[in-house]
Length: 117
Image 1 (cartoon, rainbow, N blue to C red):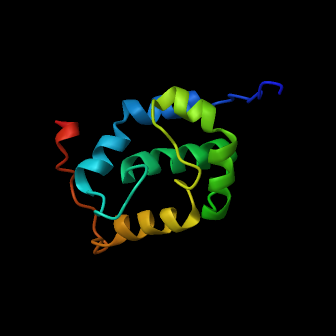
Image 2 (image 1 turned 180 degrees about the vertical axis):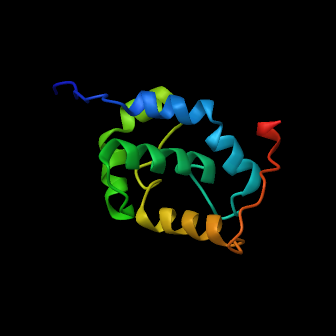
Image 3 (image 1 turned 60 degrees about the vertical axis):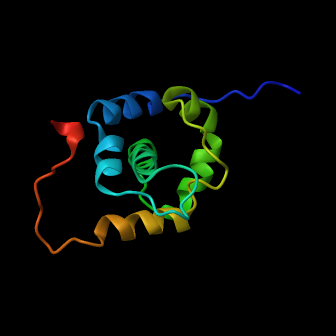
């Protein structure tokens, strides 16, 4: 079997920028994953979604699962995460959007996340 060749493109660069902006830590510091949640944390999924949007210039939830599975080797190598085949389904992204928007009252609140202190 021939080795899989995967184009790296800007994925490591985008993930590195998001890491420097502590996106994962901020999201995970505010939103604790529900007990039934398995796989990537909300913060990790947010990092993948933003990376997907910037890399593909698309923002549809439905395309991300295939994108993550196509670029899984690069994502895992750059992040150190174990990314499951179903960790980025549109159902998980819908739940993420629901959680992130649950307590929004139309006003932005200052972040009190410890990662920013």
